[in-house]
Length: 95
Image 1 (cartoon, rainbow, N blue to C red):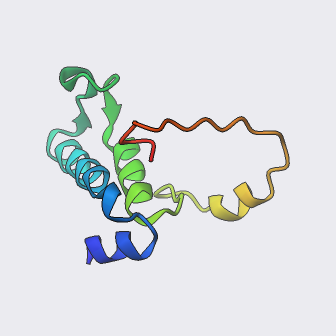
Image 2 (cartoon, rainbow, N blue to C red):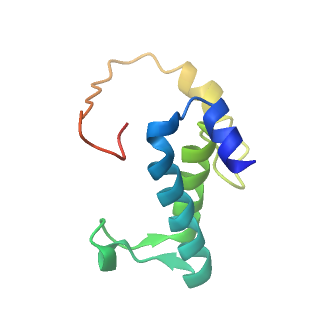
């Protein structure tokens, strides 16, 4: 189901490693109570809730924060400011 939901949302086959990594990171953070990014050379230590929100967004494509009533998808559609977007051709986690 996880895989099917991801593919239907447009993740695509090339994004499967990102899906697997983000869901693994969520599992690690649940087991440890935090995510030790610094220990694996991927940033700094993060709270398990941050990793959970990130992994859910990676899986579903929807920006939802647990225990928050704000509909971020609707709020983000109302943003009317210039945005600088940068893409990286060879960045697995950015594509």
